[in-house]
Each structure stands twice: as C-alpha cells, then as structure tokens.
Amino acid sequence: MGTITFLLVLSFLVFFHELGHFLAARYFGVKVHVFSIGFGKKLYAKEYKGTLWQFALIPLGGYVKMKGQDDTKPGLVEEGNDSYNNKTPLQRIVILFAGPFANFILAAILYFVIALAGSNSLSPTIGNVQENSPAQKAGLEVGDVVVKINDKEIKTWDEIGAYIVSSQGALKFFVQRENKVLVKIINPHISDAQNIFKENIKKRMIGISPAPKIVTIYHNPLSALTYAWDKTIESSKMIFMGVQKLIQGIIPSSEVGGVISIGKVISDASQSSIVALLAITALISVNLGVLNLLPIPALDGGHIMFNLYEIITRRKPSDKVFMYLTLAGWMILASLMLLGIYNDINRIFLKGE
Image (cartoon, helix red, strand yellow):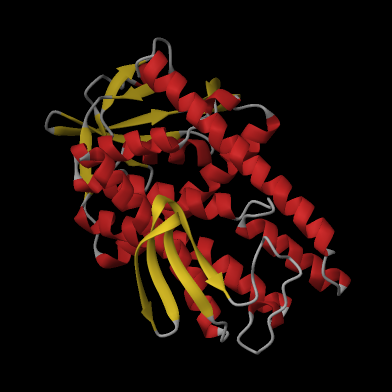
C-alpha cells in the first residue's frame, strides 16, 4: 500500500509540474505533442486536442514535448508560430518557470487545506527548565503553558522561540499554571545553540524546552491564506539553504536522500494521517520546485540560464556548447540520483533505520 501511495503522490506532483509548462506553452500558442507522466514505454495513451496524453512505464518523472524543443537536438528548428524555438527568450523563460511555479502553487494549496483541516504543532507547554537559566530565575516551572508574551498571543511552541529571537530587552511572559495566569518578567541571554543544519550559532534564549504535547490549530479562510503563504516561503527558504549548505560541505553528502527515502517518508505519513500525508506532499512539491530552478543544464533552471544568456548577448549559445553543458547536467543529475540511492540503501537496509 505504501508503494502505491508513493507512486500516486509522485505522479500527482509530476502532473502539476508538467501542467504548469503545458498551460504556459499553450498560452503562448506553442503546440504540445506529448504530455507524459513517466518515462519509457507507453502504458496508456489518448490524444486530445492535438496532444498525446500518456502514462509511461517508469513513473519517476514526466515531460511535455513541445514543437521546436528537443534537448538531444539543440539545433532543431521547426517552422511556424506554434514552435517553441520561435518564441522570444522571455516567453520561453515563462514557459520554463511555469513548471516549478506550479509546484509552489500546489504546495500553497495543500498548506491552505491543512490549515482549514487543522494543523498540528507542539503545544506551548514547558517540558523542561534549565538550571540557572533566565526562565528558572523568573520562576517558570515544568507544566506551565505560555499563553502570551508581551502583546503577542501564543498558540504554538514555535511562536515562543520566534518571538524571543526577534525581540529585544526583557519580556513579559503570561503563563497558565493550573487555573491561574501568572506574569513573569524574563530577560533572555545570548547562548550557544545549533540551527537545523547543525551549525553552531548564538541566539537569545531563556532556557526552556517543550513538553511532548501536540495542539491542533484551526484557521479561518483568511488566516489559512496567511498560513499557506508563510509555510510555502518558509519551506522554500529551508530547501534553498539546504542546497547551499550541501554545496558548501556543511551538510555531508551522506545526508542526500533518494527515491527510496522519499517513498518511505510518504508511506509513513500515509499511515499516520491524511494531514501528515498532505504536509509531506506539500514539502516535496516545494522541493521539486526549488531543485528544478537550480542552474543545472537539463533542468528548467539551466534552460532559463541559456535564455538569459541569449537576452544579454543577443545570440543563442552554440549547439556544441549547449550539448556539452546538457550532457554535463545529465551526468550531475545521474550522479546525485545514484548517491541518493546508495545513501538510502546504506541508511535503511544496512543501518536498519
């Protein structure tokens, strides 16, 4: 069942990505010969309005085949106003960007649905108070629930940390203890910590950690839009930073995951709850959007760079350069895929995770 869920989720994400390319191409009058979910041999195909819609044997991606575009034939020229190669560089950039953009839109829609259905977060309940910390000196105790800091209403644990880090000076904490609301003045101190990439940093802290309690937050449509926007931006930034840290060597290559890890995560989420599955799907959708914008030839981002080059220099890159860079891009992608599969096998099967 987990494998079926993985394939359905992946096909769903690929469909939206390719739909973005398809709709932008049709908007500019480009003929689309094929809209494929998967690669390789056709399993099912049906022609509709001049486009062959198909499912293929290998369901790990997809593509739209437009008139006048073929990575294996960079010099391909197909006449007619409905040809991709006859569109302006800016129009081609819009067509290329539309795929990743569709992934961001899909993620925002999923986060919006999650917000309406009820998003799960850590409760703002204190599970531990460090010795000699500002929190202990102010009188906070295990089991206290933070309900407000200064004028900011607190509903989740993440809001506590975010407010402390972005604030200055002493803070007025309102905490619920049994049936009473107590007011505590706390002056955070600068302390050593680690970020999500395990880098050593310094930040304002008061010395508390959360209790293992979950709270479900329900949003109205207006606040759900804000939640969806914030989560999509937050996820995008996190993935962009993750790629940057990987390139810098801060994140080891052993952390790169492949299709096996993705399948396991989706399978685990599907067994947890529909909200968990939607959350993972949204995160993977953002991941696809970000990764496809990387300036690697053979990806949308690489093709966008080619068109930017054409806009700046007013000439296309030579067919030879285009082919060599595209082959290099495919080699990079193949290497990353093999690395991810190797890490998956090592992590899941050899280490028993």
